[in-house]
Structure formats: C-alpha cells, structure tokens
Image 1 (cartoon, rainbow, N blue to C red):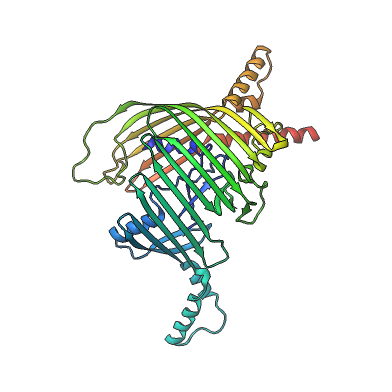
Image 2 (cartoon, rainbow, N blue to C red):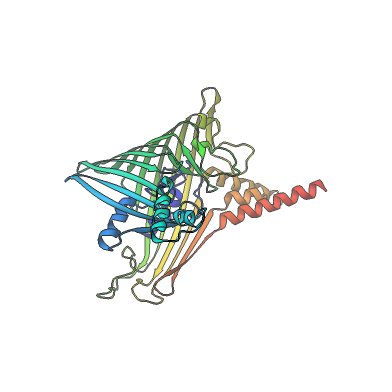
Length: 437
C-alpha cells in the first residue's frame, strides 16, 4: 500500500491519472499531460464519489453527507439515490445543495426582516428557488460481461457552469487492462494549481497488470479538441502545451524491484479494529524503478512541446521536430528509488503508528548524464562547479513523516526540489542585479 502511494506521483508525469478535486460532482480531474503534479493533490479514489456517499448513507446512517471546499463551492450537502435497473445495471442520482451560499443569500437579503413565521417561510422559499444553489449528477454503470464495464455520466449545475459528460469503457484482459474514455469538457489542473477546461478530451490506455516486481509497459493515446479555457480568473503563463488541440501517443517500459528488508510477523491485537484497515504490518522496505518513455505529438501541442533550448529546466532527451507538419518525437530514460519504514499497527489510542517515506526521482536520464558530464569537465579543468549542472544531477527528493498522537495522524511532507529551484532562482536574480550595477 505504501509503495503504491509513493508510485503515483511519478506516474502522474507520464500518464492520464485521476486526481481528487472539489470542482466536479464526481470529484475527479486530471493533471496536465507532461506537467509535474502540484503539491497538495491526491490521487482520485477508485470508488466513485456517488458510491462513497451511498456507502455512508447505508452503513453510517448519514441522511446527508457534508462537504467543504474553500476554493470551490464552500460548505455543501450531498445526497445519493441508487436506481437498480437490472442485476448488471444500476444508476445513481447525486444531488448537491450549497448550504453556505444559501445562508449567505439569506443574510444579505434586502428589505425589512420578516415579522412572522409565515413571512420567514416565504423568504426562505424565495431563496430556495435560486437555481445556483443546486447541482445534479446522473451516472449509469453497466456490467456488459464479467470483464467489460460501461459507465456514462452527466453533471448539471444551476449556476453558469457548463454541464459535464463522461463515457468510460473498461476491459480486463488476463494480463492487461484497457480503458477508453471521452470527457466533454475535460477538467485539468496545471503545475501551478490552476484549473482548465478542454472542450473534448479522449484517451485510450493499455497497461500491464500492476506488479510489485518485474517488467511492465504501458501505451496511451490522448487527443484534445477545441480551445482550452481557464476556470479561475488571474494571471497565468499561457495555455499549457499539453492541453492544446492535437494527438499524443505515449509509451513506456520499466523494470521494478521491491525488497523487504524487514517485516514483522507478530499478530495484531485481537478484537481491536485498526483505525486504517488498509495498513500493512510494521516493515522496512525499499523499491527501485528504471525505464524509458517515448512520446509522439501531432498538432498544435507539438509546436509548443517540452523542447525549450533556452530553458535550463526544459527537455534534454532525444528529440525530433517537424514544424512543417506540426509533429515531434521525444524519448528519455527515468528512474526512481524509494524507502519506507513503519512502526506500529495503529490499533491503540496513543503513539501506535510512525511511518516514514523517502523518494528520489530522476525524471530525465539525459539531463542527469549532461549534468554529470559538465561537472566532470569542471573537475578535471579545476573550474568552479556550475550551479545548473548541480541541479541537473540532483534528484527530486520527497520526504513524508506520519506520527500518531491520539486517534489522529500528524502529517509532514517536504519537497527538496522546490527549495533547490527557488534557491537557484534567487541566486540567478542576484547575479542579474549585480550585473546591472
């Protein structure tokens, strides 16, 4: 479980992975293809949002499920109605009521305050007629065969938001998984955390079944159509290249190895349910990944691909471009190493869980080799090491520490690559300032 949580952050740089977001009723969005994942995002749950709410209503006796998102809709209440059409086909109707917006509209209503109960009811009824307070989603889940699933969903909003539609087909082969998806409009989030709508986004994904060790490969075809629009107001660096109209074909092969340095076989406390049922036994383990990825781009996105000759953080791998036909081919190697340690089973009320994770990502083998070569030349020529070369060989380091105090966990996450990038920027700005003096 811990290795899977560490793994998805690197996979998000290559593949179309779902992320959790409060901007949609189904709670899912996607990162911009080719952009690193913004900090603070988590992977989308495999159990859909309507199924999560239905579980809470059935087994937790919750008539309404509250949800709060300061940057989106504020405080809302959600309710799901399950509609069984057949043994292999059911639908869910998800309704949302924006309680925070309703209370705010009542407080800010003009005119004298109501002087009777009937006046209060009329005032509340008038505010409840505001369509912007409501949102509705319908999802149809059809099991065609034991290995084939078809999902259709539509979301409608009472305010000015555009309705969202999704069609997803999934097939399980003996050793592969195939998914074909179309979303209109598709919701994406860039590396700065800004949200974008793409009028039409389609993808076909074929991947080997995930395994802890051994070789695996994956092929993904992604197509965008229409002009992307930013959801939030404010300044931006322009439309991300991965969202421009065009076709992208991605393929990767990697070799993975997981090693358990130590794992406890001691039994857990009897008749005591862990606070996290997916938690593994106490252990100390390590994991390593090495592989290569290739991307072929066609369309407007290829004209603004990751190839930036004047950008020290741009693409350094093997590349071919054909501007006349708006196409490009990129290839590079990547590697990752991670370490995980856990003490405790999270069964007791106090200090029964400590977890530590560390991950080193080398997203570009060509950039690492270029930086190592420059540093070697500087060393043999007795020159001062170049800061950009040092950055090229430094991996993206991520540390995570979890400590149980009572029934709750204290989480600490630290990303060294962000600090190194900021330090380099400050030094560069300082040099420019001294040059102008």
